[in-house]
Length: 89
Image 1 (tube, rainbow, N blue to C red):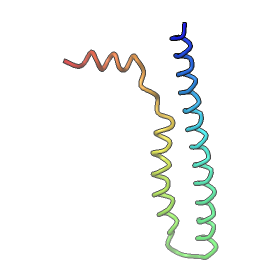
Image 2 (cartoon, rainbow, N blue to C red):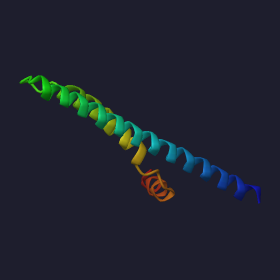
Image 3 (cartoon, one colour):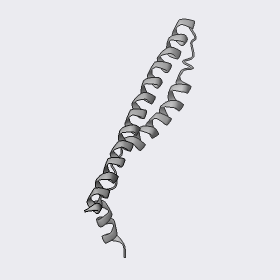
Image 4 (cartoon, one colour):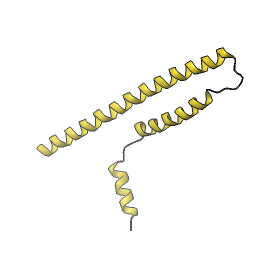
């Protein structure tokens, strides 16, 4: 009986961790959009010809992409593990 309880507790722990990671991602995305909108506005208002905000947009955007992949990729299922095991010699 305790095994089922332990399993439920483990699933709950995993679910809480995933929810935290998603919340952190949405906060990260919000800060990215607001900050980069501000620097694009600064670029526009100063009348600079060269679009220099491309550098923080691209570099930070790459970091945001990796963050999204970490947060939203599907966990490895037992089925995928089983199929991979069958491929091994």
